[in-house]
Amino acid sequence: MENTSNETPNTNASNSNKKPIQKKWWFWLIVIVILGQVFKSNNKTTQSSSSNSDSQSEEVSKRAYRAGYADGQLEYGDPNPPSYVFFLANHSDISGADKLVYKMGYDDAAQGKPQEY
Image: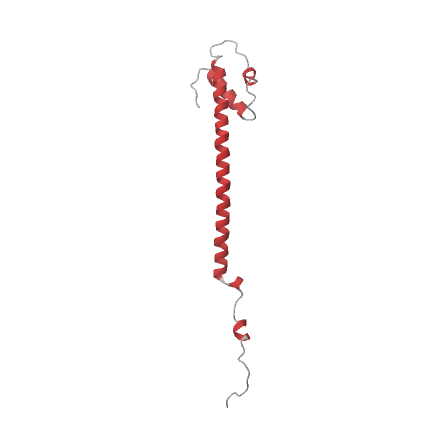
């Protein structure tokens, strides 16, 4: 017998076999690639800004060493040199750890060592 009814074929059966998009392997591959690109670009900007600040900090330290070395040269050979703090007071732009770099330059010059930076 033929099916004479006007029923439409059940299309829900084909829809129920379809997986949601988040369960497809290629969907997650695309998500991972996009996230990788986002993190990669964020990492590059962080590295470039930190490398700029590192080079600026290095230049400040070199200037502190040179200033200390120049002041220490004035005291080379003096049996009773004044403290490096006396000279450091004239350099208000030197602060923090660079004061130690200044003292290193000062000591190198006062002892007759060659200038490093």
